Image 1 (cartoon, rainbow, N blue to C red):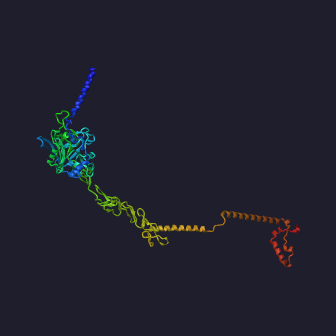
Image 2 (image 1 turned 180 degrees about the vertical axis):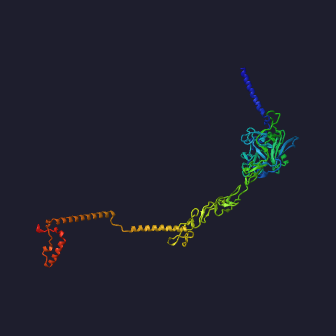
Image 3 (image 1 turned 60 degrees about the vertical axis):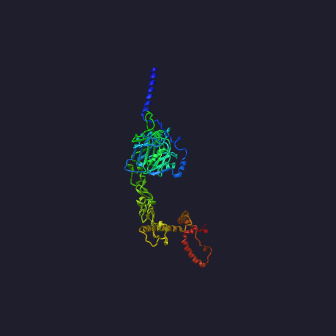
Length: 575
């Protein structure tokens, strides 16, 4: 039991040592006991920004902010820091502080988030010393307000050209630097913050516009440590940090504004003060904070704050010179064809290239079909396309479109490259007209003249066409003649049948004659078959005597000539 009790005692002792070690690890942590709240309920006035504009209109019209060109002196130190000690009229107490004069604000001043990029997004609170070391600041002081419980950055924040957060139009005093180097102080609408015609490269929100055009603008009676930013008549940026403690020592805003005016400040706004008021030189604390240290309240420690104003070696805005140059001692050395402090503007500007080209870093780029330094000349004959570098392919005197290279053929030719002569019988532009020559003779393809000598190729073509046509005409004529012949009444098959029939009859007749001949031969060989004799009819019928001799003589002759057929005459005497 005693051993277990000893074990627990050792465990609690070890835990206590760890806690003490963790507390001792940051001996400069602040207790945040000097809180100076500009507003009792939240950040910003209870009325809208329209009310602020209405208040301004009596003296300043509708303009709620002031712009001033910044200085850009070269060859001087980036900034000069001075320590001042001054007394305050209301008491015999002395006030200590720092004034930092910046000669080239655009290139040497940055709004830096707590701990670096995305510090506001993560609601971080980091000491000015730590943030200044990370950003390599020569001089630094606290800037914007933040939520004491949430740690959230308050108001508008733009850091090195990047919009970190937008307050949505909440009207608090602002300090910003635009891309052209203008220093802006006052109240900004949401449209002003988001304007891209000349955007902000640095922007931070404060509370109370202390000086406007050299006049005291607002005052608050609470005495405390103060931080402010303003500019003089030369456009130099001035950072003010005053040591103090709320309601004990320091300045109120009336005294602060008066002090700034006495030091030549034209416009200035109040930044986060009280225990947040901190000034750092080369990463080391140079001011006297009002917050007590957590580790030992006999000492004072710098508070973990939100954004800071960082003065650094000259940098270009943007640092990469928009990708078109090189940053040398805070100035962009632009590449060929680019100009401007940020190398973001082309040397060639409209309307340098006219209506037929556009500007680039290399000068004018002409549209297809145009050429020249300012794209004012069409392509030379025979060329077309971008920069007129492509050659036309048109032949026979054809001209090409300077943009796409399409050929326009002269009269008498056609085709994509005008390589073909008009077909026989046609002439003119695009070979669209028909020849009007007698007997349909071809004409000259350019003019349509019928008294023309065709080219060798055309003559050869015409000769071949004539031969072909003559042959076709002759063949057609033969076919027409054959078609016009009298067609037979009977078909070929009918004629064949008739021919075979006649041949058969002729053959039969021949056979009959042969049979008769054979019979005559048989009778001559057998006399007993002569039972018949030829008796003329004249003798039988008793013809006249005057004709008897003649008939007798004729009968004898006839009988001799036709003796072979006498057997065919029947004789009744021998029956």
